Length: 73
Image 1 (cartoon, rainbow, N blue to C red):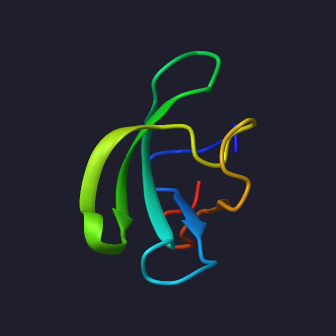
Image 2 (cartoon, rainbow, N blue to C red; image 1 turned 120 degrees about the horizontal axis):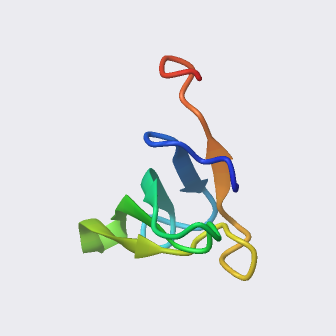
């Protein structure tokens, strides 16, 4: 998780359409990598652009990181 790069995805695929989330990582907000800014798509809430901690230590363990193959390193 600490190696997230812009465009990486964080996905919580469990649950139903009200609990599943997709987060597109934008940037780290601090050197400790404990806060990040992302676009988040979730259920009936629509899309948000905000600071998150999902998937980080102490955050929601259901989130798994993915790096789209097309973007690579």
